[in-house]
Amino acid sequence: MTSGPALTIEYTDPLEDFKGWLVMDTLDHRLSAGGMRVQPGLTLDRLTRMARNMTCKMRICGLRVDGAKSGIDYDPAAPGKQAAMARFMAAVSPYIMNRYSMGPDLNVEMAELDAIGRDLGLPSVKMAVARAQGWDLPYFEKRYQVLGQEIDGRPLGKLRAGYGVAVAALAVLDYLGISREKATVAIQGFGALARAAAYGLSRNGVRIIAFADQEKCVLAEQGHGLEVLKLLQSSGTMLPESGYASGVKVTAREAVCRVPCDILVPAAVENTITGNVAGDVSARAVVPGANLAVTGDAVNLLHQRGILVLPDLLTGSGGSLSMEGLFAPKDTPAPAEVLSHVEERMTQLVNQILWSSKQEKISPTRAALRMCSEFIVRPGTRPYGDID
Image 1 (tube, rainbow, N blue to C red):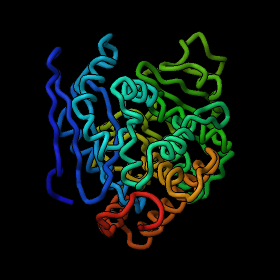
Image 2 (cartoon, rainbow, N blue to C red):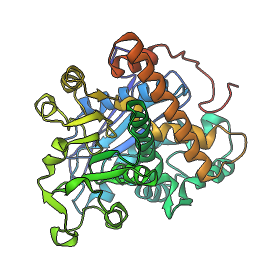
Image 3 (cartoon, one colour):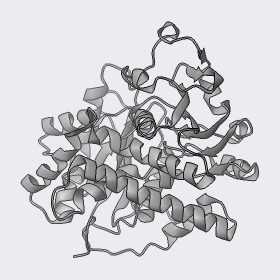
């Protein structure tokens, strides 16, 4: 996979003149999938790299789906965000109806996409899955509704991707021989992905000692864990400094990457850990949640320092694995069954990559990319479940 994307649609907004793009990396199968983001300064090059990364996620998971990404160069805090998203989605709606399974990405919630889709007359922004699977819309919608069902008071749709990151981190702890009760984790980011990762780790007894949002880093001193459930009760940003108990330090957001811990989880935006930052990382392993969170030079530097780095094309595949868990079974699964599928498959994939890395003395990133290259393209087959 060295050529450019198979399809690029560029959008220029007639009212505000901002740009937007839909990028489909390959067109080998019936379905393309990937999130939509709203990000100031977004470029076609960035989306192209993310679409390629999505293809790698699908291939490492063994899914017969092509990677895609879409987004608009727009301020997510602007009052016109919803209308801007709607105009862009209307422009690419023929692809949503027939080929492109759209999901949430940076600064976009699934509920926003669903609401805009309904206003545009789209039964679902993932309706292309029905066509690719050979299902009628009512049957597809019955399955799709599982994403809205809750586990521990949280919709499956908001848990699935971040929970995959948590499972990847748990597999790394097991590989390193660190018990979950003694493990420490620092999480950079406070969006849906980071929050779901925190939930998954806390659910398994792991202490989260640092959490950072756009404004600050909250750090538990003396190795104590943060009150994660209390943190997760807030939305968007964490509590002000006065909202924490004694033993909790509030510092600059960048400090989260320097916290001594077992695992650092960058789960916000791309290029968080660059070559300049990598020299200050004090974790034993880095498990990225965000797309392209660790730059190539940072991966090499961390590997040289003996810090294990899993590639985000693996750790960020929880959302793709959840689609397999939802749509592959013969009968409609329960939410817990979908999450169990993510857990089983992610653990299997991480163990496989780490074993290959150790045996061949190569980085986990190289091992994962080689695994992607061995994927066999099967045009004309349905994305999920047994081959037709």
